[in-house]
Length: 306
Image 1 (cartoon, rainbow, N blue to C red):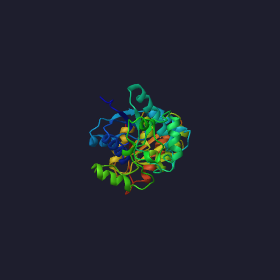
Image 2 (image 1 turned 90 degrees about the vertical axis):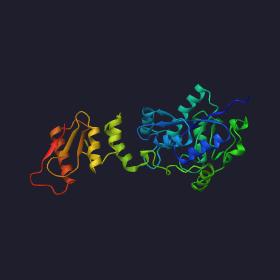
Image 3 (image 1 turned 180 degrees about the vertical axis):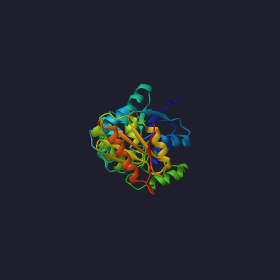
Image 4 (image 1 turned 30 degrees about the vertical axis):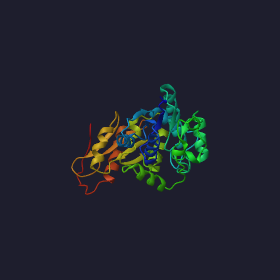
């Protein structure tokens, strides 16, 4: 009886990784999808994709390790504070440990040659394979025919003839392949990692100048409302009713949470970053609350919510 071939697949939940799973499954390869989550991205899309594929997803939180490379990436940033090469390399290194411990034959990804200028050019693909110590054991099913044959292909564990040679930024080849495999549901490209958001990255950079080791709350509150840095204070101004309610979940010890009492206006959270006087910080928060309110009465009242 022939040995069952097992592949560990990095699953983002995007169309490319879904197609990579399908290509391998077509060859009878046992596909085990794995998703890494951090402070800046999660596994929701991967969960949806695996439900569609009928596969059980393994989720691994590598938040602290990922935060470390976000602060100081070896291979630099993309358009914002997104260390794409370092991030992907970290995933591959972590996946390699699992591959070796649990006896998988190789690691696969949904990478497409030339799709992303920084992290999926030929030089970057080779760099990732070498730096991760996966020479010959990292398969990109969608672009394999544009790359050198891997060891697993040479051994006959994977049929190279049934792999693809997709290259470039056009999505048409993937969309055509999706029709062939009957894949109808998949997310639009991009949007998975908030580090690609320039506004968020700008605020994260500012936060790291004040606090070298931010916690989960610090990193997630930057996704809420309007963000301001004023006189050693982080000020978050809610933009709508939903954010007003959401801000309450972020209150930490020493935070100042302000709400209008007798008029309509936003909730405001003030986080003292560096030993700011609470009275002065409260006044600062009130100023921002009034600035973003309308129809303010003469006897306007603002309360500090406990």
